Image (cartoon, rainbow, N blue to C red; front, side):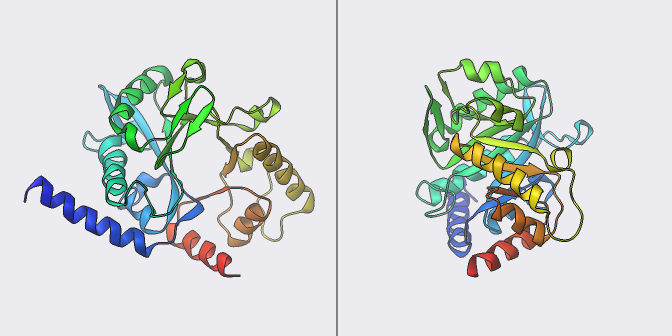
Length: 264
């Protein structure tokens, strides 16, 4: 089968799937690469944010949770960037027709500066679909790359033009936010609020979450917490407080809940 035919088949399939799925801007696929079909399973469930851990190994950006698990064929390009580009081409410039920019959160597990240098070279090949951060301004495109983990903040901050930004932390809210550098603020729920019992979230915790969200939103950033309880009532409490992204490993469960919530 020729490359052209394979692409056309993939394009037709992509259009069909995208048309059938409702984009869910609040849905974030935590450790997405651990699903049977990295990226594709998340897209099939309408997720508009996905997360991939990467290691720089012999010049290649390999996707894995642990260094011992890396495989040469599981590159960032093969699992994420190439299929995203095919889908963007098939869908007339978007990951989901009429959907938001897909957030690709890349978690650096290897040394930051060298990993970013390799990533920067790779991203240049996909520039047409990637959001551009230039001189404090943001030109949003089909896919927005955010670097988490060991991101070399000083390196990115010094670049006048970038194809990636940084996943900030709550401590970044202590100073004015630059959304062209840290458009996302993430932190550990368990390490920050230390409440994860059953039942209704206490009002004082809700107030603290809302304060964090309001401060981030005022600066132009969105908010995410990891290490959250996987319960529908907890997801609702976060969403009611204005948290933008809900971390989930169970794609179907979060999809079902968000769709039900939207119908209320």
